[in-house]
Length: 401
Image 1 (tube, rainbow, N blue to C red):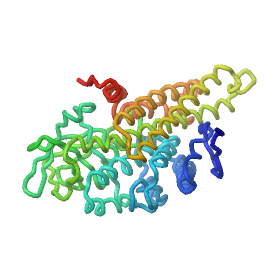
Image 2: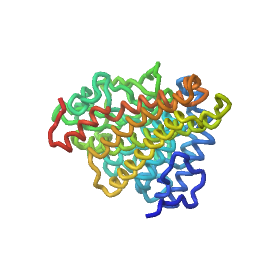
Image 3: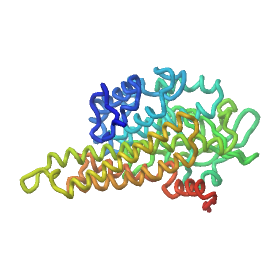
Image 4: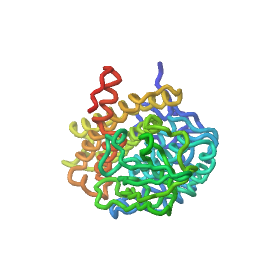
């Protein structure tokens, strides 16, 4: 069987060694190139300055709004109809992350976690009420699940509560690490119903009394993302803002299963971005009278990185196909997240190594990738938790505490 050809696609990635992008149909490949141009020409010049300052560039919202890239995965919403494939959604996450993981996360929280929660967990009236404005990026979304005292145990240990009073719900508790929450218009808040002990979802609108998001400072990763710690004190939310199709954490798990795969694509994007930087540097940096790319040890690091990228890309292509076919399971996305983020850690370390001392300077970009990789490695389920999900699947035995 002959290898796939890249076809008319221009501006190909040097890291796409097996031409995975050629699997996209032409219309979707055009959208990918549109994202590539946006990230390269308009967003990349912003990132180092704002990453260094630890601030979110508000102009990102305008740039993404004008791009029309939001809402693509949702039938009937956004500029592109019908909904695009999971393969394109994954490659778009890769594309954004190979420029900057913070920017990709801002977009992914809005377009993925928040919009997908409403699309999957809301009824038709709620979808029509919120998603058009979100697809147009006239309103920005956030997703509030993780808590100050809970992470991996969130399924059974959620402390934020919801108490119903007639047609109103009263929320109390706290959330932490919530991206976009300092400026989001709609925050999907997950809370445990005190009456039936089941987790339910609520859309809290900006300015609701008792909802207090405070930006988390002092991060060494994802410094562009405005993560917040949220305090909820008698926050009153109408029943009309409770996601009507979410009745237990089992329903929430359906959302996390899909978004976990998106994080694996982000990890691949970090690998690709770091590898590209290291390859360019190896071609240009001269030592002992020649480019360092001509040294065996440097080539070894580059080839090992390319191997990790190519293997991870193949895994994620098949994961996207399983998603498109509607037959993917928790263990499929869990294995991808655990495996790809582990390979990502190797690649960013090898890539930074090629830069030597210059690898700790923000001016060379690679330090940003090295630091941001640690955040991706940890969120959407740690490697250990995802390993146990897969372990239970293949052995039939649960090793969870």
